Image 1: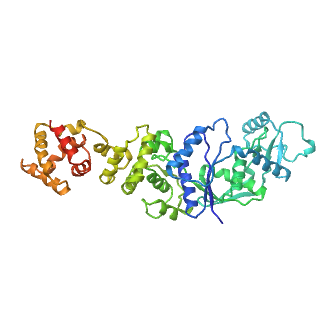
Image 2 (image 1 turned 45 degrees about the vertical axis):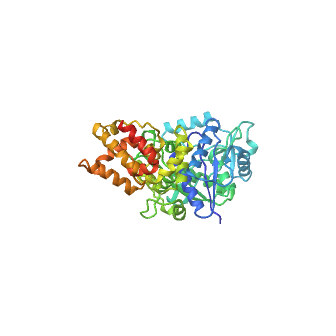
Image 3 (image 1 turned 90 degrees about the horizontal axis):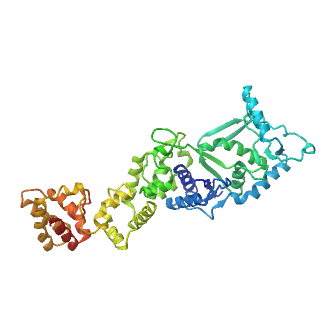
Amino acid sequence: MTVVTRFAPSPTGFLHIGGARTALFNWLYARGRGGKFLLRIEDTDRERSTPQATQAILDGMDWLGLDYDGDAISQFDRAHRHANVAQQMLDAGHAYKCFSTQDEIAAFRDSARENGKSTLFRSPWRDIDPADHPNAPFVIRLKAPQDGETVIHDDVQGEVRWQNDQLDDMVLLRSDGTPVYMLAVVVDDYDMGVTHVIRGDDHLSNAARQSLIYTAMGWPLPTYAHIPLIHGPDGKKLSKRHGALGVGEYQAMGYPAPGMRNYLARLGWSHGDDEFFTDAQAKEWFDTTGIGKSPARLDFKKLEHICGQHIAVMENAALLHEIDGYLAASGQAALTPKQKDGLSTAMYCLKERAKTIPELLEKAHFVLGKRPFVPDEKAAKSLDDVTRSLLAELTPHLQNASWTRDMLETAVTQVAEGHGMKMGKLAGPLRAALAGRAVTPSVFDMMLVIGRDETIARLTDAAA
């Protein structure tokens, strides 16, 4: 059997971080088993669905690297097929026409509440002979079993049971002939050959009602895995008060996609004590048995730590691609070819301690900026008359030095010791002169990257 999973977002807003994790889990499960990962846009809500939201979903998945097989499928475009299945169920006696009006249903529920009874609507039309049907608008309802129980075997939640007398005869087709979401999902999953439905546990109750459609049509049920939702650090449902919700916001904050994939995979799933891993390892290891039953908690410190590890090991070309995406997402100017060249040369001394792309770019100011480098407030404190004279004294030593790390260290050490100080005392003034910052890569790395002429020019600027 070929494994087929799907991600089925509604295009009514941005790609939520929880949705991104659901997409990732489906992607990992399929890719790790040589299966297919499909994308379905559930755009049946025509009032709320927008092309912009659809594009935001596609952009978010593209950034995360979650490639899908074939074209994205529009659920709305398949409405005729959904209606056809409802008609098949009607013809087979698994569904019926209900002529109850909205006012009648509301009156029933109001009366039930007043009398302390169940508000579960039981249509009086369920067993009426079609010969006695009026010429009036109707909906098509599923004829659900009214006794016994419905059982779902879930890979995460275990065996879940519902008493059938607590399940209503849900509407399949509205009075205008349009299908409801619950029907469309089942028909689409069946037609797309979906074998495993991995989704948030807020859909768990839907599984019971959807399984009745599968049974009525004689279709095999997919394997279900309902995953707990993501909560904020305080244990409450994730909301705007916890910070970024949309995937695009995380890109705009400078988290690299490999780090996001790694972190999201660990958010509710585990493989022993492994925290940092590659995509290849995640595909090999991922299984629904490793998903916990408790909600995962978003932790920005852990996210930064994981992202920092990925930045440190990423190939320069891949990291430059991430930087390009970050700058575009955050509305900043793109790098010039010269800046990219300088960044590539300097990358070896930038990647080790940067947890996010903005941190890396801040450390790269010495290659991204241009003369004259004006020291910021903190860096300026290390420049005074004494340190400026030391920089002026250092300049001829550097002019005559071989441009290697050892010789540069020797030149700086000689000047410092000549004034009875350690080499480290010159680090601050050199950072201010070379980068205009107090926190930078090693001063010797900066010298090696920018070269002799640029180094001497910056020291001359600062000493003036």
